[in-house]
Amino acid sequence: MAPPNVIEESIRHRIVLQGEPQTKSNYEQGYMPMDFTIKEIRDAIPAHLFVRDTTKSIMHVAKDLITIAAVFYCATFIETLPSLALRIPAWIAYWIIQGTVMVGPWILAHECGHGAFSDNKTVNTIFGWTLHSALLVPYQAWQMSHSKHHKGTGSMTKDVVFIPATRSYLGLPPLEKKNQDDLSELDHHHDHEESIFAETPLYTLIVLVLILTFGWPLYLIKNMSGQEAPHWVNHFQTIAPLFEPHQAKNIFYSNCGIVAMVSILTYLSIVFSPLTVFMYYGIPYLGVNAWIVCITYLQHTDPMVPHFRDNVWNFQRGAACTVDRSFGKIVDHLHHHIGDSHQCHHMFSQMPFYNAVEATKHLKAKLGKYYLQDDTPIAKALYRNWRQCKFVEDEGEVVFYKH
Image 1 (cartoon, rainbow, N blue to C red):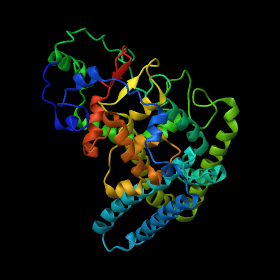
Image 2: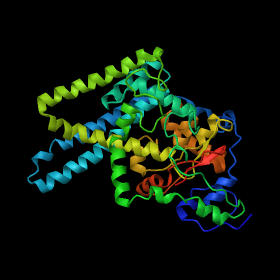
Image 3: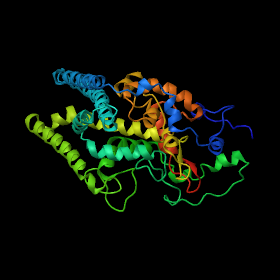
Image 4: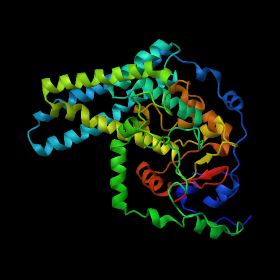
């Protein structure tokens, strides 16, 4: 094999391969889907880590709610500060902190949807419905669509979200065939359509801010980034491919939760003013949305993450093609380690979240080079992946993002 070309350090530490570092083209060409069975992977993790403890889960809810209440209480003193120069940074600090803390209950509701919160389905439903409704998330509806995502992760046809666009879908010219032995030529040709997407950094930044702020509600309302459908698809009515008619009852329960929360917010707006509700709840809510979009996007979108055609896809291969990344010790703790133990979560979504970090150590040892982790700074990774992950080729059993 030809000597590897020099590659940037951010790619070097994301490729876990035997031997010397390789170029991205070499990595793609040499990629072989893993052959582990899901049983082999599960047997590598101690059995006690799969045991759920309802009391422990509820304590996590209590801790999150107490933290939110404490941050809220501190914010009630902001308007007593003597000058606008003090109040403005104080409000900004509140919005950032509260938006970050409020992701915790969002994650716990998500765990309820997987059955990882408790062995008792009723407990899962009560806590999941309450917490998600409080954050304007349709609990049962998203639970069902999210389940489909987990069952089809990494598949070009079975997944319902984070499905790469293909070259032909974007209307790009066909890929010209090059000498497969000329790695440097392939590396250059890999990016030959980059000029089509060559936005300025400012444009990219604006788009990212808009996606982070409104991407989540747009996914719920119009299935943005989900499977393409011939008609309007959303999480509030029974429409395929997300739902089927027999699931209408669950959609109704989800909608009731949203209506109840909107009613509460309307009442509080009447009592305290719409501006007050927006300042204390609305802006942190947008912060929660930004966190969720950022976390999930970076978990499933990366130049080194493969996607599979149907004839080579299976559940464990798709589950392994998710990226673990830390957001810092404090944020990881507040977010119940959904970012740095996500591959484990995809492998075993009913494992209690508080055991996922320890289980990840065993998973990493078992998967070896198939364990994907990226320690690129979050802002840099978000910008890089948005610029580099544009489409995949129409042909190939295993495909990687191109730009």
